[in-house]
Length: 406
Ligand code: FAD
Ligand code: NAD
Image (cartoon, rainbow, N blue to C red):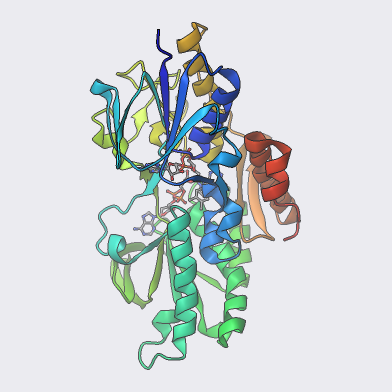
């Protein structure tokens, strides 16, 4: 009998961790393991805001897949773009070929949600992957370099609007606030001429998070020049301005840099596959399989799990994607070797958000609040722990963050 084909789509947190676990637990004569990813590297999406602001080079964030996964003997790695999934035919269409599976793991991650707001697709910058982060960093440099050349509307070059004050928007604001003094020095610009404006639709940034920590974050960012406009919905993005609405009045801010951080959704390939979805995500069963397909697992931001207590979905996080990989890898192996299936239960360990590389806020186990250097250290411990889990001590030593104050 032929070995079953296990195909894993996406080398993000969920896909990579599932692959490394199956690489260890399944013998080469038990299954054929294939990993498909658009790039030949894995990246830590949780560091992209640093790459986008230019405070961390993107080579620190990306990790060549062959450094983690045994692509010589154990894993068939295909660098290609997934175009569509055909569950009824057990087939995945790639840009350059098609592949068939016996068991599929979908870990294609997130895309930004633009909510149909005019101009966002065309004019706003995104923090979505290495390419979009690199583009934003280059664009910031270009605008600072261009400023002295500009005859009209010069302020649009130095006004940076961040649309959305969730964790991504706030973390990016913190990095940017630290980067601006460097850019000003490099391009001979007075810091006072630069504005970082965060526009948030809710009455406060980080809606739903601990008010004391939100207050701390806002003070920390305001002290470094970030302006907040809350209760203000971004309505339109143009090439050289944005429009927001507050108190039923529309206001226009000149800017050539709108950074869209107002929400994420699952990779749209999932919804287009025809599988049953809930707001674009697959509401997986407890064993992480899609409702209608016993051969398809969905992991990370493409999946949704409802919190039975609150009735709300668990938020899409790397923390959950990593935890899910234990159950997905175990259950794939069980389907092949006939073991017991496990059920996934999220174990929320808290949230820690950076405010630049030298400040942070966090709510960790037992509702313990952290801020300042303690939260900064905790954030780096979390990041380093992931690197260790993924690639052991050697990856940790190559990519880890060890200076607690920088
Ligand atoms: P992803 O990590 O998104 O990976 C998906 C992979 O699929 C990528 O490698 C991508 O290249 C690949 N791919 C996509 N489309 C295709 C295609 N068509 N063909 C082939 N390959 C494709 N969460 C936390 O828990 N803690 C944090 O501190 C945190 N910080 C964050 C900071 C930022 C700036 C952002 C944007 C998010 C943050 N998150 C954080 C959320 C977290 O990054 C996501 O929840 C997590 O990345 C989801 O993991 P995933 O495995 O589902 O997919
Ligand atoms: P989000 O959905 O959490 O936040 C988006 C914010 O944008 C919200 O505050 C919302 O009110 C606001 N918004 C929406 N539409 C708007 C509009 N038109 N105008 C102005 N504001 C608008 O999205 P995110 O911050 O990208 O986070 C995505 C996921 O990643 C979440 O699950 C989050 O927890 C996770 N994440 C975690 C961390 C961390 O743990 N450190 C960091 C970043 C992201």
